[in-house]
Image 1 (spheres, rainbow, N blue to C red):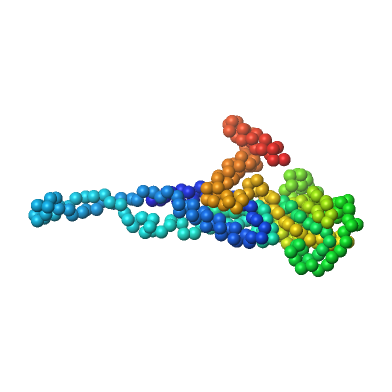
Image 2 (image 1 turned 60 degrees about the vertical axis):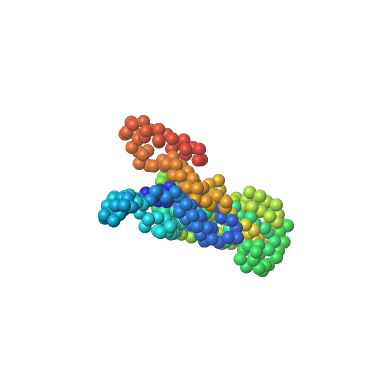
Length: 331
């Protein structure tokens, strides 16, 4: 039938969700194991009862009358050609789209899409999406790939580095990136519009551009170890590890990255991320339903705000107020 259990289940799976990618695992493996789990879940969905068809069956009435000839009776029988054992599983493959990639070394929030969620995924990344990362770093060595697993190319001292000196390098880097951000924004920087966008954090490059750090701070300083929190656009994780390397050089020392963890990608945060044993169809479905419900509440669309003044219908007003309340909470 047109709305079999599997198809109905699939409808509930369409949308965006995010998982926690462990370090040391390629993102393709993460996606493949989720695809496998979703297929299992879909094809396990209770199937519709088999359709019946009316067949004319010849049957003798009584043994004694058998010789006199056959009577034909109409009987409803199941259509066996529609049996799952004959047709095979309804879903042979399912496409799970992957958002901003995390490389093997990195862990954290990885956004995925199912079905029509793939279009939403594209829309999501054409807006200016920032991500947050936590970088675990260590002074004292430089390696060929900027990570602690790479081949050591240089060792150096770090006793002279103070938190104050590190902070100064970070704010210098932030300043350089702020300039880059403005260069790439196609807006007159002296305008009121630019000011308002800057306040809302909406200034940014159109489409893909050079990686830009929009925020950089040190949240732990215990030499040789230090931890950075980074907010950025268009970055790769390798770029972030290179930043750690450059911070080391800037401080007349060296540094490597011991870990890169993405804690937020756009709307998706670590709280939303499904950990490995929740990569099941049921849990993904729940996450996607949650995403749909929060998306409805989070949309203070500009059009709605403009028209609500004209329309006195209660719904519009409460919706606008609600979105303002939500904005307040989000801040």
